[in-house]
Image 1 (tube, rainbow, N blue to C red):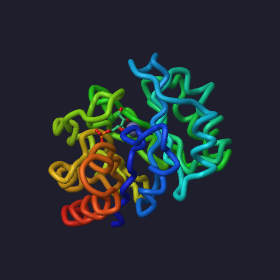
Image 2 (cartoon, rainbow, N blue to C red):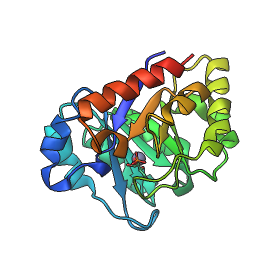
Image 3 (cartoon, rainbow, N blue to C red):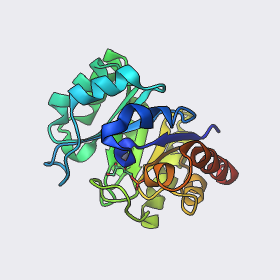
Image 4 (cartoon, rainbow, N blue to C red):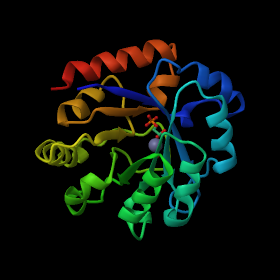
Length: 220
Ligand code: DX5
Ligand code: ZN
């Protein structure tokens, strides 16, 4: 099973973003955290900025929407050319309709769940999605601690994906580091978002390689 490492530019230098995008060119996708100071108590950037990131990024975009009213706003990110657009089920009135619209535009469609949100209601809907993001921290900020109590959701997802013969990517986001990535890989994740552990301390290329190797070691 392939392992994907998606660095989060939430931990990058926003004033030197083009440079910080080049530093992660060995990664699979660049994780772009869109926050609206409403769905989460933090604010990052919107479509105009994501469009410019799309223009200059050496690797495709994995957009993570932490915004309200995704039915209205999510399709615009797919129209910008993002490779994948992931929205929170807590913020969508009709997740399947949003996912279908994203796929129709040409993006991979992902749903995300906060740590307290159960995954069971979505297990029968998996063919509608290309990716499921299990948040391993409360969304909103980088640099928080990985919550191992979210792992049963990944185990349930991995079982359901395999049982249904699907290739839905299972992603984790929050507190992913060399100390925790193996826990998520062992539980069934194959796509790993990492902000602080890629950009802080050492060279991003080396950090990406180390995370990739550690994830692969625990993948089965
Ligand atoms: C948090 C964001 C994450 C964040 C992860 O709400 O969705 O993508 O950048 O940061 P780290 O890896 O530092 O926990
Ligand atoms: Zn994220």
